[in-house]
Image (cartoon, rainbow, N blue to C red; front, side, top):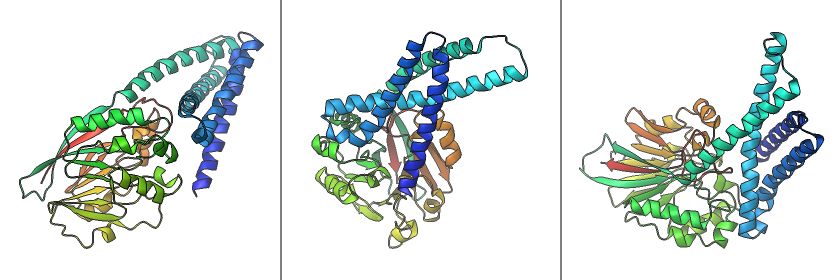
Length: 372
């Protein structure tokens, strides 16, 4: 299943690449064959850099790996937007052919449409990179229906950090500083702390930064889908222990005899327990906080009297039009929702996967005042 998905994605990218080479080559003919060759060769090189960085990035020195990955990932975004631009141009030309309204040279029209698109893409990427590099801090106040202790704790929740080559130790240090500035009682990590391979994380000794997180009630985490893509979950689990992070895999813990934190393994693991099994031996009259990476099973939390579910995974689409797609895929693709007595929050993520741009979304850290 996993390899079938990657094969589909590869075929999809190759189709887009062929499309922009043909249409971009036609538009470049407005200038000269030299510019057409420059466009085609540079596009192919940048496209290949994406795969080189993804497959062989761990074998390069970090600086070179980061450069290759940044260029390749950035082109991936350009590829998507050029595809949409050329598709829109084709539709306009088809409409004009059926209902002639504008008399224009097709090559000239394609060229200027492409130039306008490139300018818009460039501006959007500058703004998107700024939004990625300046995460929002989202504040929530949640009061459980079970409240009877008249207590309140501050939770800092984060997801989808994707530590690795792009999200390196230097950036992690800034994230840790952000977390500590909030003075949390408890830190919860809702999956995809690791991007894919644990190798660049270990090489950079990122546990040194994670150990600097100050949270008196502890740091708890679950696996996301990306932790299942690397060298093995056992290796990552050992790294979490070394970094002072308590890993919950289809398990639950009672924190200071006051409330429960339950953690589900990611649904990538088809053998994970259902939520009812995980919570079957606890006192459900006590507050329950659930970490579940993918927000695909909201009903289960409500049925099992969970007070607060924290999820991630969606990145809120990360870049347009992904945010629109996410809204159609999930009942809650991003933000806050309350169903019955259960509160849900799906974070857009603190880091990201791939292109370092937030277009139509925002990187964020979530601060929750939880009253119980």
